[in-house]
Image (cartoon, rainbow, N blue to C red; front, side, top):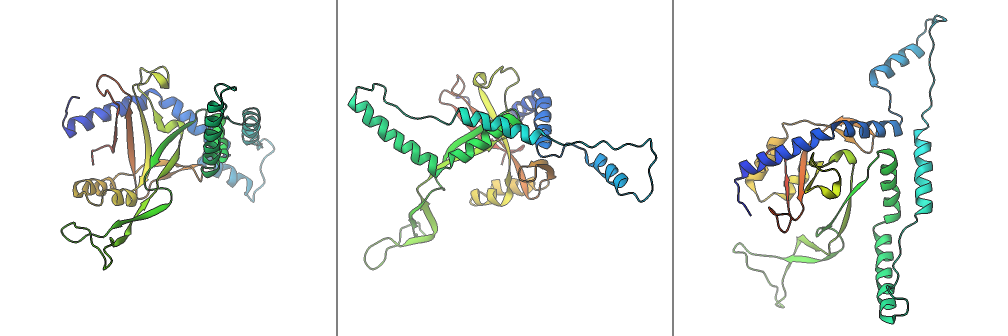
Length: 289
């Protein structure tokens, strides 16, 4: 693998990001508009204030002035399409490759029980409805699935250590747990990715043909500081990112708002290729931190 300096590397990643963002800019604008249509916020704020002043006016209006009343049926249409898809495609199941093979039957039953438990634990039925809603409403659906070692159940605690880094023991010879450093079992995370936050190379005709994909998202600065609390150089860059302000889409409000104490993170995922035989990924901001 070719070794490049951090400055050259972040410059190269920024070029990838800018090119990918530009090639689908019109599609991203349409997808954002689709969300506003679904939530009933399809009128501009300026027009909304104008009509409010008109309706609330104490003065009589002339006969030539007319007010057009509209009703947004997009939400009902989306619910109808989503319901039809989920009704005809309820899910998947696991069956033996050979019905007559007892070993295949046992393996299928075991894997089916694991799958049913995973669907229950991760509430996949509820998540599938949201993903289907994105597919119909926004026009694209994407999910990032990864294993997070900080999730799941607490299985123990890291041992307490002295100033020299040696484990400490009690009178019975057992390690003293550090209650501030719990150890979790880990669990899978299903991260919802809006279509306008998933970027591709401009020359890729389909997602499966892209040699890399980019996911952008806003992350709380306080969370970033916890992740890199032991790295002074990265902490400086995180503090520097507070100077930047972004206009982002708020999923809970279905509207745009200015970011507060957040920073934009870019995740680059390279598939196995000649440059990265085993694949590779970068997580960075506009400037490396």
